[in-house]
Length: 493
Image (cartoon, rainbow, N blue to C red; front, side, top):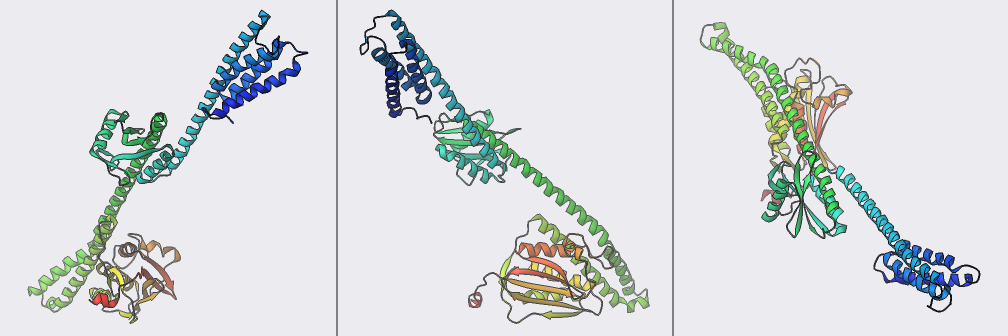
């Protein structure tokens, strides 16, 4: 292992190796030519150059020439040279030693540079691997910070608002961005080159198509420019990937929204045509009856008015569900949640469906000790209306509909059951999808989004909803988390 440059111990080791070469040469003086013995000293210089570096090698070259002259060249133990041949040997030996030390040191420096480059490549590979798994800009900023921390460099990722509008630059991770830093970052983007203001280095994040941000670096950046530029390039590629991923997600949302709008329009045009036609016909008949032109029809005017009301209420519920589905899918509905009793929404829900449930037997099973719940009363009332109306549609005329609620563990469960035909196991999940109904050609009117609205509302409350078959009955149950309700005294005050 090579000793680091500047260490005094390297020179001591060079001296020790030269002394060792001298000791090894002493027994050879009697039966080996001094010129050949000089190779031993040259080998020592080469070893020192390879293992200890240029400085110790130069010292070893001069010291080996001196020791070779003093101990090997006759007369021994003297610096005088009686033969001119030895002068040439000493001169060549010194030159070869110096050249050898220089070449060996150059080779060692290049080897060290290659190792450093390999280390940087491994670091960049690890950085690229981590960045490839980043899903947000905040994660990109954290990964860059961890990468730069061992180098005593601090990084600040600056991107445009929405990953695209570079005229509104902002720092990632909620950090503050001063006007001066924003100006330098804008210059780096406009000129597409690094900008150094003396305290910070601003590198544009060059992507495959365009630069979408800037990496501001402060600290010990001197000598690390190539590595930091590589970091900026990798970051730019990831920021651009996140940009196009965001664009693709938005496009997918737009497509889904357009598909939903088309489905709603198709459903409205198909499912509302029948009640509208009925409303028009009933209205015409009622006008004729009230005008006295048809005396027989006048006696049926109350029935026609009731039918007109029922059809109008049915159409109103359809439109309400359609609009609720559109609003919930757009994400623009905010929950108005309060701590309240579940019984407070049961009565209004039943009253809204008075005409639908008039000919039905409704059984309500609510224990007296139900706890307070944290929910939006209007939306949960919509869920109950949809579930009760759905049960009334598919239950036989004389069959009872059962509404029950109970609290157990950390959940509050509400179930609406009707003895209609049991659903196949494969349809228990599909009926909660928009515009999916229990049968292929239902004889009852509807848009098929009532249960989809229920699932969205319950999901917004942090609950779950499911359909199941119990002893030949179809039950739809939803659960809401109980939470930690306030004390009743505090609520009353």
